[in-house]
Length: 460
Image (cartoon, rainbow, N blue to C red; front, top):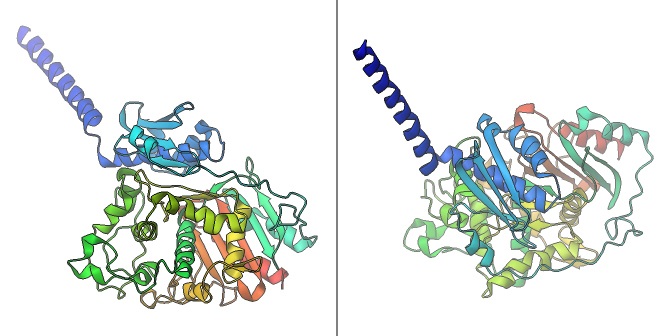
């Protein structure tokens, strides 16, 4: 009997040792997947709470856990209102990640834990935007006179058309809003994340600097790191066309280049720039958020004064267009996350779409170089006709290679597209812009083309 008791005792000690060892390992050296999950949770909760004013617990439940990896169901988040931080961890203990809200620049992930250093980073003072002129028609003001056409209302009131998880739909015809709808808990004033639609905004910012003479599309030798190898031949045009030839894994849902960059790297552009060349520049299309982070760093480095660079998007683009709600977020080192992190209201995203429809001119003032938007819309040679030379899609979500716009849509339709169902469709020949924002994971297979085509048919 004593032998059995002794064996059981040592067995229990061994089990406890394994459990304690596992807990210690998870606490001290959490796997990258856990850190990506908690980093994502902290960042999304922080941005939606401090920018959009949404309840943090609701954001965690609805935006992070419901559509995400099963692991996220065990992640909790804590908001410190005074410090303006959010911390997230698995089971309240493991893989703790932090995000910090900074005035005028939304939230940033702090993967190295250096919150005080990120807080001390010199940022230009947030400028107070003039109040919108409520009694003037959009886009000069915020007054809207929706269409009385019953066919338009029927389309916008049809949940199959607007799609599951819709948060905003805004339709502009001939420069005026003719219809809009908002999901429960959201309004015309709610800033919403555009995800990869931000890439097209980055391309427009580069256009403003091309017009200023600070940048040129054929500019090469873009990073000192590249100066001694074949990457020195990569041009800004190659990057805008997603044809740099650099390696980058854009798959989501696991630990890949894109999730590591967004949630584990304080210097996102540096991480992307360190990737090796796997194809000759200009020869292969590879959609990459890392590409746009590098473009952000390149255009910011065209300024001698870093604060002037940080102030440029608002000065050159958002303020002239009246995009008062726009908040462009930067990483912990101060590089704009130009691939992913612009928040703006549905109406302000529509202002940007209308700006592109108008060839980069706003209220009679040219903001982008003449012909720049036309260049953006030209097919990137390596993309098989699906992507433009300036961070634009020439086909809608889910379309096949070679398909231009989608069934029932004019051939000149082009798109801004973002993760989880964010789209702006621009149809110059119909003078039509349709914005659709929401939380609609790709597994739901929603496609906005049917809604856009139906609207184009009833708004001839």
